[in-house]
Amino acid sequence: MGNVIKERSRIAVLTRLAAVLVLIWSVIGGAPASAHAGSRVVADWPIIDSRCPPVTPEGLVGYGCTKLSTYLQEARLDLRYNRPPKTTDKLYTNVRGNYAIAQLEDGKYIIGYSDTNKHAEIRLIEQMEGKAPRIEFDPQTGKVSYKAAKASPIKEGYSEIEPCATTCNPALKAAKVRDKFTYSYRWNPRPGEDRKVLHDQTNNRNTGAKQVAVRTLLNETRVSGPILPKTPEELAKGSAVSKAAGKQMGPIRPGGIDFSSVQLRYVTDGGGSSGDTYSFETVTTPGQESKDGTDQIYNADEALNTWMAVEPSRFWVNLNPSQPDKVIDDYLGQTEVGRILLEADLELKRAWTRSQDPKAAVGREYWNRMTGLSGACIRQWIVPKTATIREEGNRLYILDAPLEVKAEAFDFTIPSDPNFKCPANPEPSMAVYRDVLLPELNKAVNDAAQFKDLRRVYISRVAAEWYRDRMTADGRAAEAGIDSNDVTTLEREDDWSPTDVFNQYLKELNGTTYDLPNGVKVTTGGVDFTQPVKTAKLNDSTFKEQHATLPTTVDKSLTEVTKTSDEKQAYLGGSDEIPEFVGLNQATPAPSGTAGGQGGGLPITGAPIFTIAAAGIMLNLIGMAALWRTRRVRWVAKK
Image (cartoon, one colour):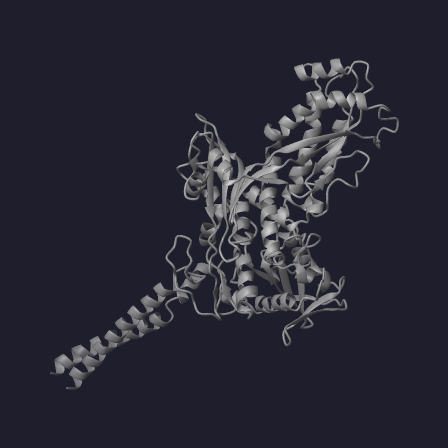
């Protein structure tokens, strides 16, 4: 028996060791996933909550997983639910904007917010330096209030979105505090990443990581705490815009389609409880290689959000040589839509000049009829014509959205040419202009490639007006940021300036492209989209007669690129899938198993929580079996 007992004792030791290791692993099975955080460890980021270590080497964390981000959540709740009546203070009204928080060396906490004038991080720096009144948050009361300006260095800081590369990062570095800031959601693309795709993953109004997290906080929990986002890849799957872009970017790209000509032609309204659906129309180009339309798809969606956020009274641009201070509205000028409108106005001036070229048939006719006339200074501008739509419950089909060029005689001056004077009797010349040149310009704005971007953003304007009316009617307008003029998430990151377009206009105004029989005339005007969208709704019989197969085509386009029956157009789109965010102070939702990744997941590993739980149970069973084996060896030895 002695030899048997000795042999089983050795086995017992090894088995007990294995059992202990297995049981430890079954309890902390997710811990090794912190290696996914890269070379940084939690100790490098002392303010990171131990429940939510950094997900990336840059310190990306879940929203509310740090001391500061939890305080910022509480500040958001106070600003939302204790907002002064009828206030216009952007600190309170910037519901969908971006915020940042910092702890000062004197122990106080200050809040920064982004608007069209400044980024949240810039406001924190100004408060740190004592250049602006403090916006203090009191962790004891959960209240935000204005205090007198007082300088104190920033000890640590947090911004909801990664500080922007062009403005915020340089400012934070100059203030010597960049290394003290963490953030939850990425904004700056890494090498090989698409900027618009990344921005959509972060700030898409329905499925963006930050936007959904904020909506979860404000509308559901009302209690601050960690909100763990899904991976960017999972979020991208949920975005209708990303789905549409993916259909023409995939390895099996359909041939013979000009995706760069996409226009938003179909939308649905989920009512806030579910995602929206978009479908884009574009033209086919049989026998030719397909053109990429990724930027255009994202631009159409960005235009939709711009038209909803900015007040309609600001939808104008104006190239007038005597009004250099009135080129574009300040809010609109910060967006891609503003750039497109202003450059379209300049293109209209160029098209007007080209149409007068006496080498072309139209130009020759124009100048022949202008013989003996004194000419005219002309103001011409682009306005919408009545759009044709089909509305079916929460569905909208945009069937036609034409534009129109308006023109009138207009007296103005040119600052660089004090001797310039407009003709005293312009009406005879205006009659010739309207008869000969105006039809050419109308054809250009509705068909020419130079105005393709303008047509795209205007069709998004039709959809935006539809959303605006529905959200105003059912009380969702304020939450959606309608008429807030908050273009924080819509700002361009390039160095484009409206002044550059104005200066280019003056340069071309004072230069002669070719010699005209009656001299060179100049124009002023702009693009005016300030008036409400005029629509004509098709009835059932007309819609079925003229567009019988359109509903089927659109529905099919949500899953694959679909051509119309005559194969002249193609549609591509997708439906938003609003992802569920896991709040650690809430029950974890069960995974749905859908392609959009609706189930709860851990932010580090990305593995479904039920899968890890099942693995833990299995490991516990193995551990218990190992312990039972150990106990059995001991029993045999004693016996």
